Image (cartoon, rainbow, N blue to C red; front, side):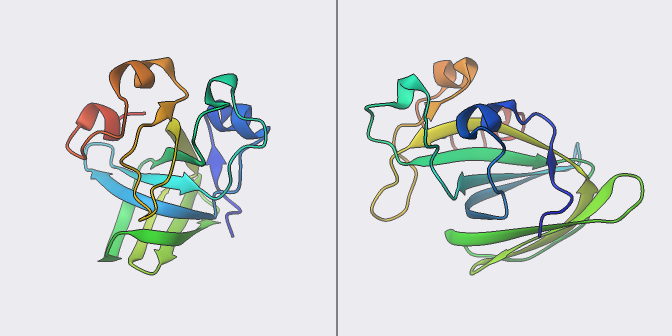
Length: 167
């Protein structure tokens, strides 16, 4: 159950889907832990493709939407399993009832991640691509934000901090 998950900058997802799509199930691509926030950023493939994609996506051979979900003011981090690829992960967020904090649990075959954080979640780096037969996402990505599309044609390596650490 994601009773506490509030995407504060939901425009990028709402524009594609009409509202924020369900974020309780996804394919988990990467986990970025940044001690300076402290933040955790999950790179995920959403469980559905928009029924009315933007014009620049129409006629292209794409079938998957990917985005980053960033959790702020993280504490009590526990990552007890991480064996990518994680083809199906579940996110459960429960309000702690005070100071706008929530407990988050991401689980699936190959991942067991738990932490507490602020109830506000950021979404960014929204893109679409054609998933490969082996499930990888290394092909060309069509980014929804102009700055991302000018800088990248695919997802950069995980050490590219200006991409993976900032939304």
